[in-house]
Image (cartoon, rainbow, N blue to C red):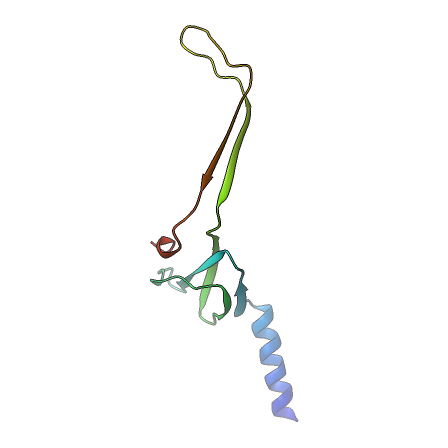
Length: 98
């Protein structure tokens, strides 16, 4: 009975201290050691365990950067009344740790 209690306490402390976690779909994880060195390779979506390391999660989905209501002026003082621009970018999943 005592062993089950100790095992339960270890699991609760591991969950509270961030020793395990889940990477969502459309994200990758990058593992960093306690001495701040980044490990090569990315963690794919799913569960991970990190006892002596930390894992940072990065978005690799297509992301929109919207620039709206801009009124640019040219050199000869011509202007556009309203300019809206959307920029879409993605991050290559295999190069996040680099």
